[in-house]
Structures are given as C-alpha cells and as structure tokens.
Length: 227
Image 1 (cartoon, helix red, strand yellow):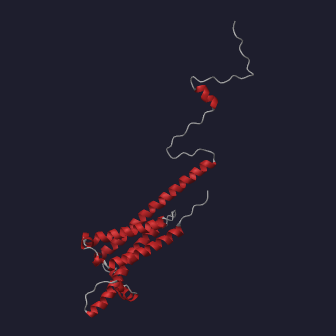
Image 2: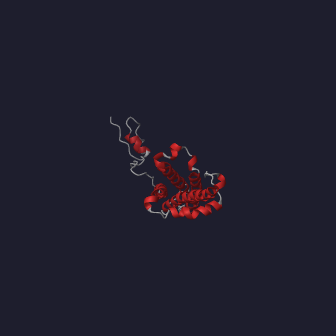
C-alpha cells in the first residue's frame, strides 16, 4: 500500500490562510461593534458574542486544517495556536485602529465614530503600542480577552484532534482490508461473524431432501438384481 501523506504542509498552509482571514474579520467586528444590535452586543455583558466569535474562528480554522485529511499529530496543536493567534490578532488590530483614529478625532473635538476610512496603517501603528499594553495589565482586568483566546484554542485543538483520529482510523481499516485481499482471504469488519465455507455442488445435492441422487460411478460393480 502506498505511503499515506501526513497532510502536515497542506494543513499548515490552509490553517494559516484561515487564521489570517478570521483575524481580519474579527478586527472589523471589534471596530464596528457599536453598530451591532444592542440586544446582541450586550447579551451576557458582551461575553456571549465574543465567545461565539471565538468558537466560529476555531471552527473555520479546524475545517481548513481538516480539509487536508491530516494524519500528523502535531496539527491539532498548530490549529490551536492558529485559532488563538487569530483571536488575539483580531482584538489587537481592531483596538489599535480605534485608539489611533480616536486620538485624531479627540483633537478636533468631534465624537468618534468608526468608519472604513479609519482603517489605515497610520492609525494601526499609532494605536498598536497602547493596544499591546492592555495585555500586560493584571489578569483580573484582562481575563475576558484571555478567555476568548483560550476558548478558540481549546475548541480548535479538540476539533482537529478528532479529525486526525478519524482519518488515521479510516486509513488503518483500509490497510487491513487491502492486506486481507492480498492474502486471498475475505475481509471481515470488526465483530462481523465469519462466513461458513462454500459447499460443493455434490454436497448440496446430498444434503437437499427430495433431490435426485448423484449418478453412480461407472466403474463400481453393480449389485445383481434379485430373482
């Protein structure tokens, strides 16, 4: 049987692309969070929406990695890192743009309202140091952000681990079936009862009632008929 590919390189590339896309989408969600329906944004003090987005990011990353039929056991850990980095990157990018754009508007005295035009490298670079400083605050103040990152990492780890387990199990079953076929044996799935050996036509005729007896051997002497 040909050697099965581990899917490591395709999984790494697909997961990275998905993580970048998810980070950009989350950054937009953070930037325009004030335009979401109030009932959605304030549900559970805002935690419900953030946890849902983290789970969605984990699902998208896991699907991208799992599409490569991964067999390598390192991919679940990589997927967890991708998902965590996507959540952190989305948070940092969105907050950076908000802080950079808000600083310019505060100088003019106009209230800040995020716009697509605020998404510039200048705003992101200006607000980046303050956005990163948020993660250095005590855990009692930043536990929400770390929670969202942990949720995405754990969910991606479990999903990709399950995918790797199923792919490896399917490969083992296919290998066992091929080896049994090459050995000239009938392959049986686990817990399937063995099939009885096929009977010859003579045995079938001998065991079937009401059937015509098998023809006698021409070289066997016949018993003389009685008077």
